[in-house]
Length: 420
Image (cartoon, rainbow, N blue to C red; front, side):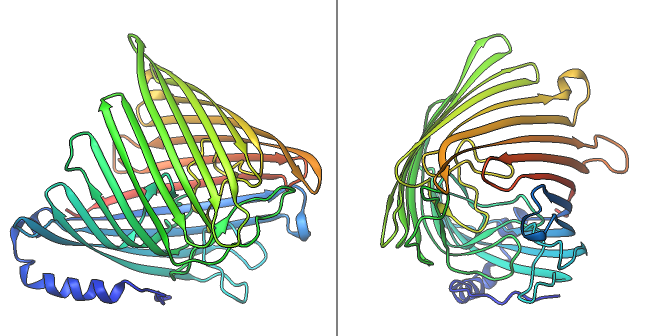
């Protein structure tokens, strides 16, 4: 097993804090409220390069992932302490030097795929009233930093975060990340920016950074209405304002209209050329298991929307399974349909399909366009010895007038053991 070699600035503090907690672990709530789960994920991915770029016609990996999660309760008292742990192990089942590169398995410097790779992350936590401070390993699902979990193992970040829900209907969040561990890696590293410049290349001037600062608020004045604002800064790369409004409006009995409006305003820092505004809106009609949605996303500025590289998912409306549709000045629209077969008497079976098309951008000085079609079919076994085993098939087709065309399939089988 490859043991994680951490570029880790937080672990010494975590070990010190954990040592301080040992004398109070005997307190009941710390143990009684704890949880231990093991998530298993069998993941197969095949990406077919239709253009045979560089003589490589496919990327293909098959692996088995294990995600062990321990979450303690809190010690008694006004100020409660606890600790979380995340253990990750990825095992290669099939891959080769000539076909690796899906992002699912770890590729070594010589191009060979590791037989297995692992990671251990610790998080110290402190609770006061309805405020929670966490220091260590994080798997954020924030609109300005959304960890990637679309391969064998999830991406993680290292840092500190404070979340307060002390005010009714209001959630305040602030934090700083100092590094990221990519989904196919065992080590933390500095964060890097991805942003596309006009003509198809990457925006210039970016620098590896060990500071990603953010703060935001989410307010829910009504049960069906939520407004969110975040400010984020990847030091020496870009700063970003994010606003979001989500409303779910009942129209008639069983018929609901959901609106989701997202706006990003990004500007340069340091020597970069970042300059982007991204306004997107999605309307979704839902009725008796059916959901039909339409989204439009408009970008302006000298570059595309910036985001943290290494697989982090930009929280833009048209970021989908393969592509993000965030090239400089690119406008895009999406048509999406979901169906939950429980409405037809088949609980556990779900379908999602969508089509995204983007244009109004250039590659190499030529006008370009691109599209992606996704199909997700999932089933959770409802009874018998395999109850709660999940099965998912993801199929992707991507085509671009000046880019690499791909066809892709992913097969995922998952199960979570709950020890307590």
